[in-house]
Image (cartoon, rainbow, N blue to C red; front, top):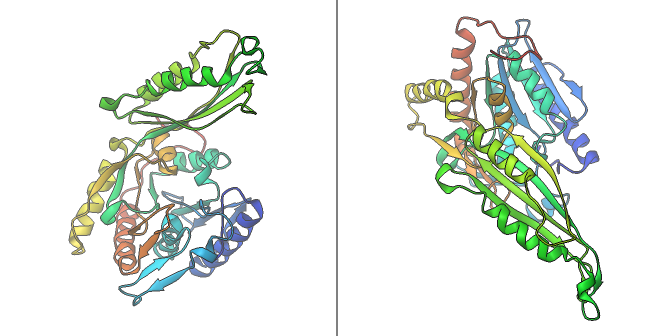
Length: 362
């Protein structure tokens, strides 16, 4: 899977990757998936599905990354380090999912192809499957040391566009309405929406303005990344972003975007994490830790519809999205054992009445 590059923005590459994932999954699971474009869904066994296993096969790495970041294993298989684009985030997690789901009944495995873009095409599918399940287990890469991700911040994304009027910067700058100056005002106002005490970050990121050194800029743009711990903070920032008003006379603002993923609150994961930690101890594994992280995943979406969710159950390693991305091969078997035992316990528990797909939870 790592050797089949799958950048999120390349439709042809994603189609090739979906073919590879489908073939490998079919070989291990003994069943072919439903092909939903670049997304794949396995419904395993004759029983109604109770557990959703969730992962993605797209990566942030562009085509050609294998030339500079080849897929290799350094050292022995038991103690080696697997490297390659997307190995940690999260193709090793897919391999784990195939192994622990094999032979199961009552499990749905959903593998999407646009998670790194914010899941624009798979969000409804993920939420529908989550509503129909009793629990969701997300095979995203672990936190440092193998810790599970028991809390994730919610994510909002915005684009603020400024429209002004061009003029010659030397001959008659007074005729212009300067989009660059307006952007400067807006960037400061936007950054001031952050609240460190509440864990809210509001970060202007990509920005551009103007067309030439000697021209008053008529257009400007800034992208904004927002991370929040609570839904109320996500709402507060959203209201404030939409209330932005121009400062420079003659300029106009257009604010686009909004909340992309709700927070994954600790309350959504606490029961599952308690089980997983106990199982790890029973297996003689090191104490299992749970951490809060700023990055979002599709686990935010499953938790957002009310489904108990445990995230970060995938590979142990590090360097997601970075040059040193890697998987600790020796940790794969213990991780699979933990996942398998957790699945055993969840599937053996009395069946709870789950809402029909598409219906809201109480």
